[in-house]
Image (cartoon, rainbow, N blue to C red; front, top):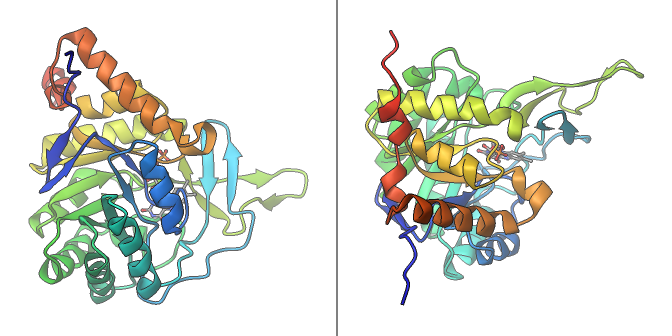
Length: 311
Ligand SMILES: Cc1cc2nc3c(=O)[nH]c(=O)nc-3n(C[C@H](O)[C@H](O)[C@H](O)COP(=O)(O)O)c2cc1C
C-alpha cells in the first residue's frame, strides 16, 4: 500500500492533520459554517474575533474588491463572548479543532474573552492585536510592543491553552512586536493581519468603505506576509502561523519555507470556495512526493536557511 507524505503538523502544543487553517473572520461567526468548512478538509478553524460585550460593526459597504485583493472594514461585528463561547463549543463538539480569536479594549478584556474561548473547548486562543480599522483595539495595541506584552501576559495568566498572538504588518519593525509577545509568553505568532488601505469613488468623490479605512487582504498582501514570517522566524524561537494572500499550494509552501509551521487561508475562500483547502493540501502532498520528502515538516524554514545573511 502506498502511503503519501505525512502532512500532519505539531507545534505549540497542538497537533493538526494538515497545515491548513481557516483564517479568522472570513466566514463570519456561525458555528455551522465553521463545521462545514472543516469538512472541506482544513486542519483547524479560527473563529471570528470576539470581545466581552460584542460589537455592531460598520455600515456598508464594508467589503470591496480592489486590484490584487480586497479591502474590508467590517469593524469586528460579533455577538459578544457568551454567545461566541456557545459557537466555539458547538464547533469543538463536532470534532473540529477550533482556535478562538479574541480582542479587547484592555488586557483584562482580552483575558476574559480568552477564558471564554477556553471554556468553549478551543484548542488555542489567538489574540487579535492587529485589526487595522477599529479604534483603540487592534492595531493601536499591536503597534506598541509594550501593550502587546501586557495583553499577552494577562491572557497567559488566565488560560492553560496555547496563546497565539496575531500581528499587524502596519508597523515599522514587526520583529520588535514579535519579540515583545514572545517575552510575555506567547506560544506562537500568527502573521499577518490585513494591511491598512483605502479606496475612493472618484465619481462621487467619497471614500468607498463605510469605515473609510480598511484592511487589504488577498494576493497583494502575500509578499508582505512572506516577508513578515521570514523576519519573525529569524528573530524569535516560537512557531509561526503564516497568513496573507495564500491562493494555492505554492503560496502555502512559500510560507512554510520561510518558517511557518502552518498556514491560514482567508480571502481565497471568497473566490475559490471551501475547495481551496483540499486543493492546497493535495498540492502540498504532490510537491513533497516529487521532492522525495516524507513529511511537510521537512520544508519548514528551508528558504530561511538558504537566504544569505544581509547586513
Ligand atoms: C472579511 C474579513 C474579515 C476578517 N475578520 C477578521 C477577524 O475578525 N479577526 C482577525 O484576526 N482577522 C480578520 N481578518 C483577517 C484575516 O484573518 C487574515 O489575516 C487576512 O485576511 C489575510 O489573509 P488572506 O489574504 O488569506 O485573506 C478578516 C479578513 C477579512 C477579509
